[in-house]
Amino acid sequence: MRTSSISDVLIVVPEVHGDERGRFVETYRRQWLPLGREMVQANRSEKQAGALVGLHYHLHQADYWYVLRGRARVVLHDLRVGSATDGTTETIELSGDEDRGLFIPPGVAHGFAALTDLLLWYLVDGYYNPADELGLAWDDPDVAADWGVDRPVLSARDQANPRRRDIEPALRPRAGLRA
Image 1 (cartoon, rainbow, N blue to C red):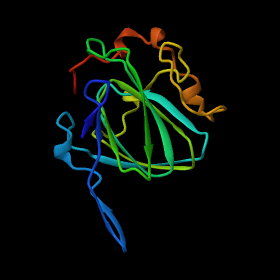
Image 2 (tube, rainbow, N blue to C red; image 1 turned 90 degrees about the vertical axis):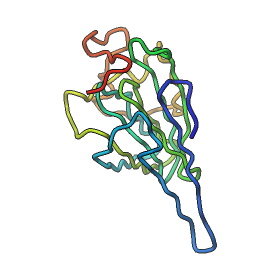
Image 3 (spheres, rainbow, N blue to C red; image 1 turned 120 degrees about the vertical axis):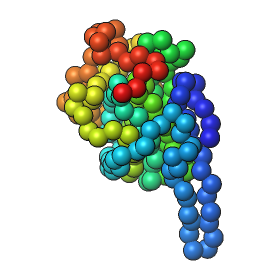
């Protein structure tokens, strides 16, 4: 396990076992994530090269991401008021060829650009709650993200997300708070 430059974000590097038949990887184990709660839902996201998702954030939900196929450039931005790393942006590459998981705590905005066709498997520790589906502008100059794609394809939702400075104070996450 490795830490990132954003507090509470973890990069998991699991053991890979293989032989002439193929390989086996244990992709998730609850004990790896000391800040995580029990994961209650698994999701699958398939995107075409050039797709950009985000930036999304949650006040209460944590995510655990694992790329099964393809390459993604992940952008993280700490929005948590009171966090030692508030305002920090980090870029991490995840690939189906390199076994790594990524734990994203509540309050850290997250998104990814599909550098190739992509299959992302992820777990969340809360069921879908539209009131906890929040966003930050993917192209906010205060975030200064390098997505690695020239002409990203975005959803209408992601095109409409506010800049960091325009997020209502009540919708800014606070460090250390979980519900």
